[in-house]
Image (cartoon, rainbow, N blue to C red; front, side, top):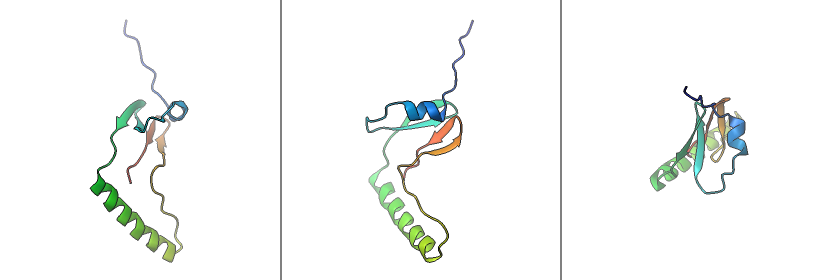
Length: 83
């Protein structure tokens, strides 16, 4: 007999302690630990977010958010985008 493993949910991820400096994401009910972005990635992302924010503010057309912020796509998928 094979034991079935229940898929984790966004709520399970939110209840887990994550004060260890790592990034945890939930994809398809499984938790994945992802590494920090490289310096070049952070610099490019910052410049892009800055340009987008300027455009959004000038056109009063929304808001630009940068990480850390969880993006809950489904009950069993919660991603933590790198900015």
